[in-house]
Length: 305
Image 1 (cartoon, one colour):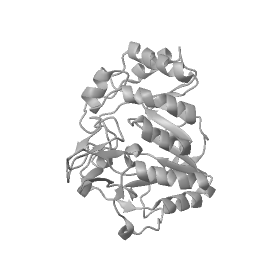
Image 2 (tube, one colour):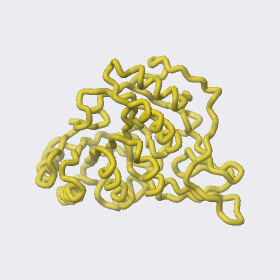
Image 3 (cartoon, helix red, strand yellow):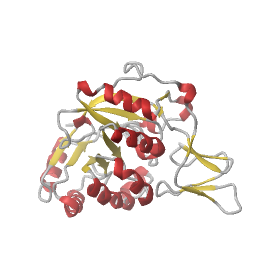
Image 4 (cartoon, rainbow, N blue to C red):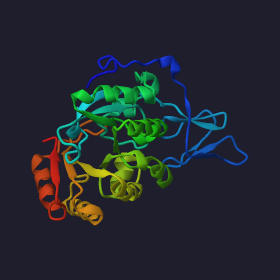
């Protein structure tokens, strides 16, 4: 992974300002506001932040704290997103920020997704600068911008502004996301998105509640609009004894097939990370899961093995 200095980004941190947030309302006769970006619907008191840690109530107004703040950049192979059926062999300029609206105990990017903001190093990159850098990298095989690493839907205002400019410049926009968003903001963003890797953590509510502090239904609800508007691939990280039951894999594959059986499913191997220290998932478990999923889907791929 390259850092901002390696990419020689021309940024001016003094230009960073908190951005007024979209999708919220002020509670009647109260200084509290309610965020409507994601299904948590956080009610946020004056001076406090939502569960994502990047949306704050300031004087009765909701602001995005991470607008334009980049914590990680790279020129990645498109297959790393992973997207195996969208411009294979190409690269994509990848940007990440901090914050996430889920709290997965096994998060692979917890240093930026869940670390305290004051401990995170970030550089301001205006939407215009992000698009200029993406265009500059086109001779190296770059096709556009991927919003990734942490949860890009919690970077909503920045992703929306940048994606609009990228589309005008002839670049592709890619989301690597947990899909945990309300329908109205998703509808606003989708016209500018070309491809999505949707991370379906598991196919049970119990898993989402216990390991991610969320719920499954909103993710399933997001999948169909994604598939109707752009290229979609789905990833599920298999954790032994948690979400690798073959009946659950079959149910997941059947659900995907009802949307479109040609949607690629990536089954990836878990390794201990962050707060979850279970043993790595045996490769044999992934092979068995792949055989089950292939009964319903045309394209099942294994990762991290």
